[in-house]
Figure 1: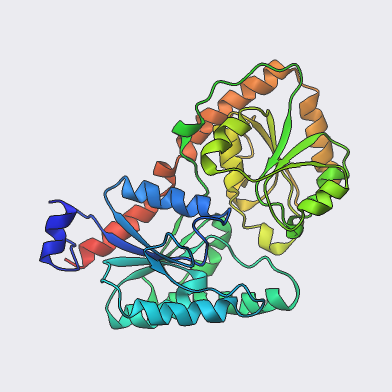
Figure 2 (figure 1 turned 180 degrees about the vertical axis):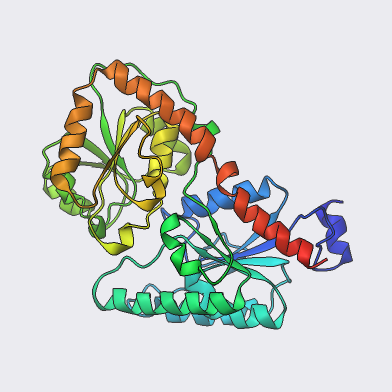
Length: 360
């Protein structure tokens, strides 16, 4: 039975071979936000399993466009109010995926309409100061609501398991479409270092620059001018379809994070991209990758340890380029097995299907 036939029956279609009409509510801009990559990766993988995704987001391309103020201190409040207003008049999905930032605005109406929902937690608060304090309050409130109202949670790493102890949970790590990274790599006499991703001040990337290494930074954020003033090479962020080609021009991917509590639960998408592209990786030891510490292409370093990170890079640079390439090929094999989006979303899809089956 196709989607049109299902829609003729009514809004809810649990008898259509476990095909779900899913509403996904996110605070991310689906055109501009760098973190949209993981959202779109998950949604594409679910759609490949015949589910249908509708987006509610502060984005012009969203199916339901909501408002989220850019004025400091008004983002969460305006987003919550806009969700409450818009969610009342939408066609009924069978299930909703609600990011923690949207829980406060969505849960009452979802409950009133008997729509089961899964809380998605991909980005715990990382801001500092009063903004970080407020965000952490909102974060705790969202989890409290989810524990009482949702059918489960989807978290990005093992670090969050304690937070979800009272409700069912699945882990959805940062993945990639591995097929898009199958690009022939050019020959080089010496390895190229790359850092790709968010260039924000909270990541303290100036510490990498201070190591005196020749690193190519690719991305955008509020620390770009700071890095350039220190003499670093910083290239603009790229469309997602250009990332595989750019990474094929590098050999060692770097991810150095500060020693702060919020980073310990990171499930870095960039490590998955580096691996899929065939790069060796030097990375801070976070929960999303720590279980793979024995992989020969991966070197893990304690969070915030500049000396250990620098030593790990230099140890790798002492290897022949042929050895770095060989290890990089093992990274590609690992990525296909562990980080293709089809693998990463398998438990989430099971949770969705279980909810559909229970409603029969």
